[in-house]
Image 1 (tube, rainbow, N blue to C red):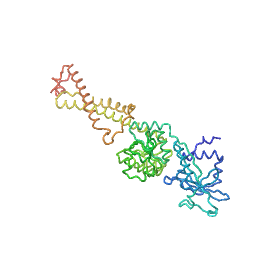
Image 2: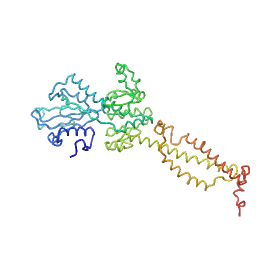
Image 3: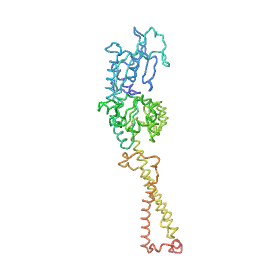
Image 4: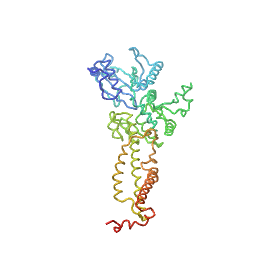
Length: 457
């Protein structure tokens, strides 16, 4: 038999962790499910942030039980009692304060915290023949009994901190958008390097004042709650993005992800956004580059995206950025190399026509140069390795720094092209002089030079 914690589980990571945890308590989870059959369910959604199901219970106090799990603060708001040492007691302000302290302690360690509640339905109102419906729900969702908290450790991949650091050095701004609690989101953001400076809350704590006494612009890092984002005007959100370099949006919905993308684009930013759910599709479509998750992503999100991340790894996006820069760099090298030979090939024909001198570079010679010495080296430049500073440069301006721009043309024609032309003509005149034709004699002899009468029999 395979140990519980080594079994492979397909599906959501949080659900998989909960399943393995319950397997350690209930030896036969399948038998437990058969005993308490699920009758109806309200799936988790990003708006309500909880999931509810009704199960058979068959006790002396009732036939059915309502089970709820989700964001702890949302669950607690729907509870009127709490279970302590097996007894249900009233949920007092003191107990709520203890809940808040425990929640903040676990969230501050970067752990994902879930709250749980239940309610045994009285058999007088819900007889054994009662038919449940989830849309709309015909069972209570208030006055539940709070059961407790479970915290899950979902550590970022080992490569993420290095990937975030590379993004920072490359001038790529990483904004974290998550459904986690702000405390959890902030702890995770700090662990991977998305937040490296104090937030307004941190500054207020250091100075022993309230957050209201601190100008939010004094802090370059900020954590924005989805509720605050909902109340913000477009100008206020623009100010948040403008004045803060390190931003985390917590307890957000997929719809708010679209608002964040649009706010970044209003500042002229090129935006890449990741998503895996159906509700992420609008943001994926709106972004300049939509990146869907290849493993956990839905089919709808994959269709809406421009790119699919096969391994669901953020570090792979950074590798893609680096490869893209290498390709762009090498294409510019290849184009510049190809353009430099144009001037030394054209000028001999101009001299041939204008100054009536012999043609320094014939048609066959040009073909040999273009096919033999231009094509293969130009192709080989596409396989050049990255420059040492490839990920230390700022992102290029798509409207100014094009593949072929004024700077590249001037360098190819007026710098390298002129040098090649001068070198070629110096060689031409030197060889002609060695054979008795100094430059002064070359002018005006084109017809005689090409005449068949002047050739040896």
